[in-house]
Image 1 (cartoon, rainbow, N blue to C red):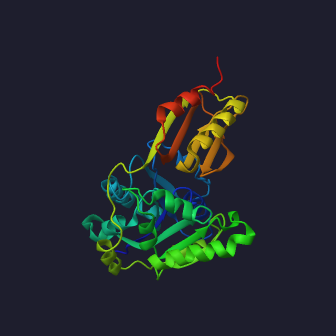
Image 2 (cartoon, rainbow, N blue to C red):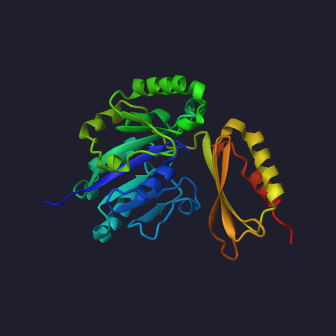
Length: 328
């Protein structure tokens, strides 16, 4: 009898902390050799720059772009898992980081029904990350979307990480967390919930979870429906050469967030600034922005952007970005 390879599926809305959790898994002392399948929402390979790759880490990444695992990427998910079998001796656990717009129900169906997978892989756990600071705002902003169901991510989970609790003011923390837990419990009464900041949880316990059951398939016919369509939420992927003027770029950011306010959910970029030998990593979640140092710049450098939100104007954004470039 062939031992099935355990799989952990990570889902969570945009900016909830999935990449941080992946980094914690890669750096964890769990004695496992991990293979990562990462699904990027945008059409540009951008997340690989944000995922830490330790020289000692016995792991590697298969990246799948331009779609979601539960729709157009189904075939690629199966193919990617089959390709992993060629290096079976190099790992003993798989972690799938789904796009923030993924609904886990159809992915669960793949593992239980795909002939190519059911005898070789076992989906052990569906883990959902929640951005506690922006929970109800994200819920409100996505309730009319035809493509994404916020509730479905919660419905199919057996483990829910209430992340970013440190961003809630201390005097409101207990009240807000109780409201979030009450909302989740109405949708899913059996999932275990843990509170965290920076996804600082027991990684060994997370990877040992074995809570998925064929009975969950019954929910697929009764839970929220996943529809494939344009919906309201879209993404923009942009590539531009050159260096950005720091002051002009800051003005661009201010204008961007003033223009879109609650309609810009996620913003990632790999940037080049004059006199800086390193690439600069920018991450934005709602109205919070952070800059970090990236890898050494290559020549020529290409700035990469992925923005996710409602009614984003691609050409206007590109024009504004070009105005920030250092003139020759």
